[in-house]
Length: 126
Image (cartoon, rainbow, N blue to C red; front, side):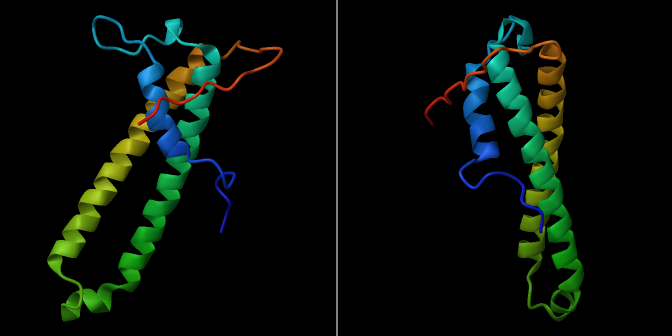
């Protein structure tokens, strides 16, 4: 299986802990222009890795469900389990879609950003 990221990185967790570092406009939109460009690069990277991880995971869950069809028919797997998997897949899909929007906007605002030295912006503490 394809290696998604370095062993010590947790892109979804990092993304969630980086979002509070962004300012919002009075209308509730993210103020990308006011954001630290290094932070936007990190957010875009983590969002893209998270999307890829979710897409591969959803595909794997689909394959497992297809192979588990006999257990579903015999009742070995309850309807509650299938429902929980369905809700999880829906939430993961929504997360991936939102991550895509964050990545695209962050890349748009850092398209011309070419620092001599980039620095890592620390996450907030949960």
